[in-house]
Length: 199
Length: 199
Image (cartoon, rainbow over all chains, first blue to last red):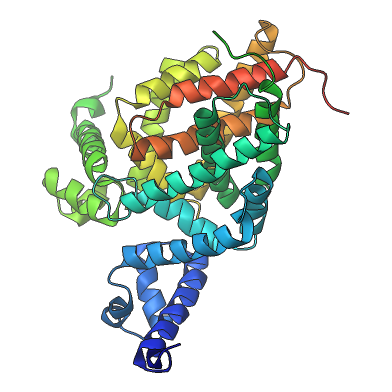
């Protein structure tokens, strides 16, 4: 605790938090279209230029929202020891924060374009999720839930792809059972993991 | 062949085709951001208002691009009898048209937002792909490539989700092996299909 925490710096942090909270709300309704940053600015009583004082760009704002979410989710669902159950629990929790799912679906797609400022963020984010799922598979193998015959890298990329694709389907139709489908895929991988590897 | 085909109507059709072709090129570079429709208008020598004479809105233009692509792909890869091989061949072909993949990735994500004008288009499009993959699975079962113990609806949604998610990964990193991964998922489903259904 330093003097700064009660000073103008702390006020700036609080304001940033307020903007992040409002951003989630607006994104839940409108997605992350250009119009939304105008709406966020309006609701927190700032001009768009004023909003950019706290977040240098629309892209920085969205990254900050997703980063804050990942840090919280990492603590809640993955630490200290990542497991597939934790991954599923996180995905079940997502149904309660549709705005974040919407932001992730829209912004991760937008960021794939060459030269996008958040391309690096998502590449690093994939690496993080990959690492977490690799550990989950190794743990499942140690506990005897999964056998040795698994191409871990391929399995992990497939699980992430299925989770991403199912989130798009869910965003269109909330009756899509993401956790049920991912459990099914996990079981397919588990069953197949006791066979001898081909070749 | 009617008189109209050589008249102003045919010119309008040709102009629309020209705009569609330019749209693909621009989208390959910039994705389907708002700025792109300005760029498309510029390249075909029209004002944005002029462009909207041919396509009533940015959304209508993107839907027209994706619809034209689906009609062509349906004839080339699915008719007369859909199969998983056809699905894979289409996906392999996608690597040659990264602009279309980019448009699909970005626009299908954007369209999930409640009230989006293309939401219905994508819901119908999912139904179409679903129907095609259901037939592919039934065909594979008839040929003995797949056994009877398959939850066809779940398998189809999982294949679509994996294809969609892998396309996002591929858009970020072209070394991602989409067809290899989907073949792996198909084989997991095939292997599991000879077990008795649980319960």
